[in-house]
Image (cartoon, rainbow, N blue to C red; front, top):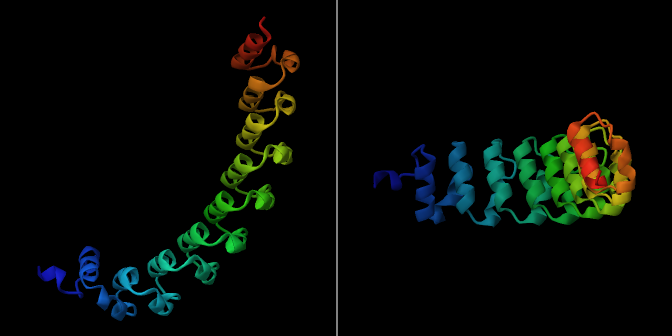
Length: 215
């Protein structure tokens, strides 16, 4: 088909088909004027040829490079201006360099780091300004360290703490200002601590307390 034999078309689908059939030509187009042709050429070029596009002006091209390079070469992109490039780096880079992205300005990048970072290194994220990052942290922390997040400002985080913490410590959340946190704590706190909930403002919590106290 004519569209399959001409690399100068501006259809990404046809460009990809051309390089798939003729990968030996891909390296010749890594510096092409058309960004999409460069990005697709990255997929089919030898790894040794990609150094010419590591600082490409187009973020789509740089993302394609980051997907292909081995993990130990990704430190070059840690301060890339494009968040999706940095997200891909955070998802693929080796553990020995992952923490270099821990202070990234974008919460999605930090979220990716928090999901992959070794548990013993998570403590730096306990006070992260973003709720989603802290939720990942509180879900991954060992039980013995959950006390560090008892006073988190977000009820969503305190609820997870109340779910995961020991029965005895869960009793500390029975007076929490958020009813879902209190309800979660009431599920497994010692029954001896539940009498304070018999007059709770939430009917569901009062019912749970009576059910567990068998009254």
